[in-house]
Length: 535
Image 1 (cartoon, rainbow, N blue to C red):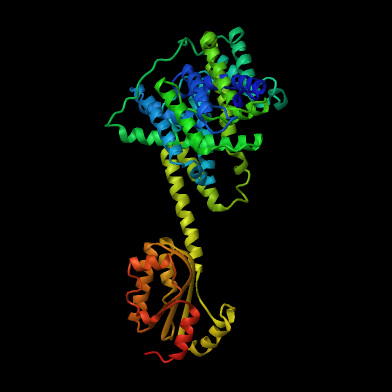
Image 2 (tube, rainbow, N blue to C red):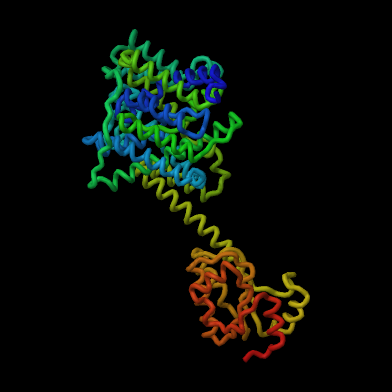
């Protein structure tokens, strides 16, 4: 009963989302190189199974710009082995299911925003660049984005008039069609209808899609090549990660619009099932689609039934009216995708770069440039590594600041400690350490702990330390040895679990007499006060 509690709204939402999905699915299919039918079946299969088994009730899934760009690269890599390419899609879906079963959904949110922003903006740029030749009626350009940039003079010089008129008409409708009217007639569908009609009646020299096979797609079991397994896994991983990020970001938008809470791990499982089914039927992969999800919710879609209806409507179209798609011009689809690519670019962040933290801006542009001109996997991997190293450096700086020499004037001493300190201060230096201590801060901490001046005794107070890793433990051990080598009497206090366990495991305090290790700072100072002449 729960699935049908909003039947009218779900039907209207699903039908409306399907109307918007139709031109986009065709365009993404053509752009990927797999063909328009692969795009439509991707929308049908991923959309249905992700809705049926996913964790976001009102989400509509299907081919998206980012997933299409990755799939284009996969199809180009295995251009002579298309079955291998779609086996990568199946592997990507299987990885998404594994992510969900391992409850990694919440970890996706740990990917830094600068990585997501740079990657998405790079994807938008790739879509725009790769559609430029189709926009003016020319075939694909070899060499990816670099090849397109180098071929720009030839693209402009050899532009086909009829196709250019249709392409720019489609793009203009996408840009200037009022948002209020889009609720009645979505801009992508309007551009598809008017652009195709204009070519049919006036600009008949513009290249069109041509013959499209009808009926159900063929089923193929995945094919695994052990020679190519490493490359296949790399491509599958980027599909899985990108699809997960894309879907869960859309889930957050759906939550905010519908006042619901999605289940991230269940959503990953649903997306994985959808992509596995798409892969075995030769369809392109998909993810949660923001535009279609928003339209579905605004039209009244509430339950998972709306996404399933969206797929069933597309199924009816592809089985009953597939021949009509043969007349759609490539230039019209390119015009639609150009606007999609433009919208994918993270303009909100780009508008803030003058005031945003410089490290974040540099990080974002690094990922963007690598995405556009090098490789998607390298871009994401480099982005995550740079973000991690940047975070480690920042935390290390904070950890080093957590090492300080205490003096009575700073208000950290109790009255008893202050009395002991007044007697001991000429011959004792006291280091107070606090916070977590990790490998990134080890060297800086060591440098802060070697300036003993004329003091004859050194007291290391670990009462504020909550965590130490192996590198930090060994650094502290070397520090204690270095102080002893310089003739200093070394004392330690305030070591508690879990630091105590880490120190014991690595024998950090073995060089310190157990009589010189104290429970807390007050006990240590009062003991030293009674033995103020060091031995």
